[in-house]
Each structure stands twice: as C-alpha cells, then as structure tokens.
Image (cartoon, rainbow, N blue to C red):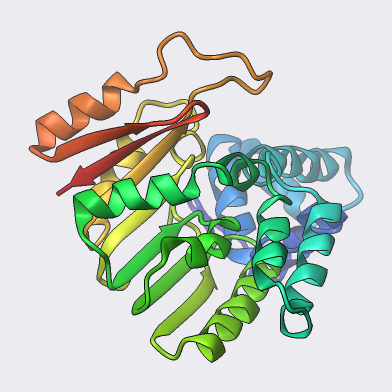
Length: 286
C-alpha cells in the first residue's frame, strides 16, 4: 500500500486488518473491503501511518477503533451475529423440510429490509418486470439477503449474480442457489464478495438491483459515487431503492429523491417510480 510517498509492507497491512476483524460482528467482512476503508482513512490521516508498525501504541489502537467504527456504520446497520447464525441454520435445513416456502419466509424475516418487503415482494417484482420485461439475467449489488426472494420472482429461466462484502452471507446464498438449481435446472446463481467502491467488471445483465445502497456509497458527500456506479453497471435497467421512513420509523416528509430524478434527466435516462409505504423504487432505463 502506498500512502503519499511511503510504502507500507503487505504483512503490516494484513496484521492491522486481522486486528480490526477480531470483533465477532466484523470477522466475516472481506479483507479487501477492510483494506479499502483503511486506505481511505490513512489518506485523510497521514500522521497515523508511522504508528502502523507500533501495535501497542495508543495511536495504533485508535486506528483500529476508528476503522471498526466505519465498518459498523457501513456493514452493521442492518446485521447482527444472531440473525446470521439463525439464517445459516435455516438455509441448511432447506433440503430436509417439506415446506421450503415457510423456510424462505423465515430467512427473509432475519433482516430488517427484507422483512419489510415480505408484504410487497410479489407486487414489487410484478411491477418491475412489467416495465423491464421478464429478465434472463439479474445483478444484485450490495445484495444482503435479498436474493433469497428469487422464488417470489416466479421466473423459470434466470441467471442471478449477487455481490456483497460478507463471506458468511455469500456462502449462505451459494448454498441456497445450489438448492434452487436442484429444483430448477434453468436457474443458475452465483454469490461473490465485492467492494462496490472498487470493482472492475461485472457480467452483462438485463436488470441490476441497487436496494438501499446509495447512502453507503455516497457517505453523505454528494452523489457522484452513485452516478459513476450507475453509469458503469452493464445492464439496460437499474432499480434503485430508498427508505421512506427514518430509522425511528417516522414517515419522511419528502420520500422522493429529487437528485436521482435530476441525475436521470441530465444523463437522458428514463425512469419510473414505484412507491410503497416503507420504500420507494426508481426503475431506470439507460
């Protein structure tokens, strides 16, 4: 890693990444994502660089503490260790139960966003696919556990690519995708770890989902990052969603995102809005 004119040895970076991930709730995040957050931190705090080789110093411990804080904001907002454990147990039970639909519902209930969508998934996918036509390939960026809703899409032939930063979630999704493939050979799914802020290529797709991700991407600093990612996504349609309630549950006075509408107009993208009580979706045609 190069910070200004100083090269930091790989083993030093790996050591601090290991220290950062010693907390149970952070240990499944990809090393690459942690390294990228560390790099951004050090670029802004160059005086911290000399302390990377002094793990017993208070300055080193401060670096670890602050990176953990960043990771919790980005990664831990809707996740918990107990929910992850329960989800894995449910996924592992899919082959041994008669009612897979019940298990899938229980899996979706382990995450706040997907739990909220349980009552709208059928209508949501019907409305999206009415606009886009039935897709053959879907990309889901920052997917979380949304791909467990694939059966609710009612698509027979489908390739589904899910990306997020948690190895545990990607492992569970790959187990689930294998299960779906045994039930329907025309379904193929793949889940991989990916840092959306640092990706090179993605598979071509008909639709890309970007659900409740723009705040994470933009970090309160304008919307340039979201715009660049939308432009780079190799799909005709991008579906972006936003919460319409605050974290305390209060209804937002202006749930529509005018900046998103202005961006689409400027880039000459068509867009259609789909609204539900807790979430608003922009179906963007590039």
